[in-house]
Amino acid sequence: MLKLLHKGDESQRGWKIIEVSRARDAAYLPQLLARLDSDETHHNKRHIVRALGNIGGDRAEARLLELLQTSTGLMLSDVIRSLGRLRSRKAAARIRSLLNHEMERVRQDATWAMRRITGEK
Image (tube, rainbow, N blue to C red):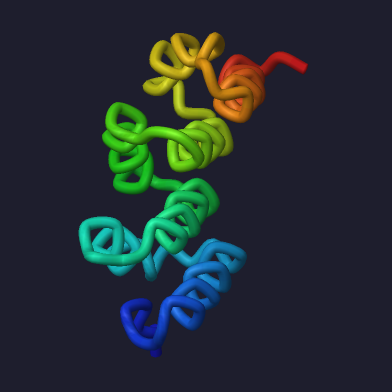
């Protein structure tokens, strides 16, 4: 029986998301995607983005590509890292454009993701 990711307080929901992420359980993908469109906390949405990168699949990649266009700050960094984990060629041009971003963490994650996507060491 699937855990209900929307139940509990912020911390409880966060731990459920982390567990799903670690297990890479694709059965939770619909709930994770729904939580992104809900009133979930920013902190837990970042956990969800990382979970999408661990779980993968076309639906996860498509949602991450959408978020790549609209996210800022640490969320953007998490999105980049998740797309790099998925080796998303569809994200390469946008991630390449972020190699000179004003935020150091975004630049670092963009560099890491481009190495994963292109297969560089």
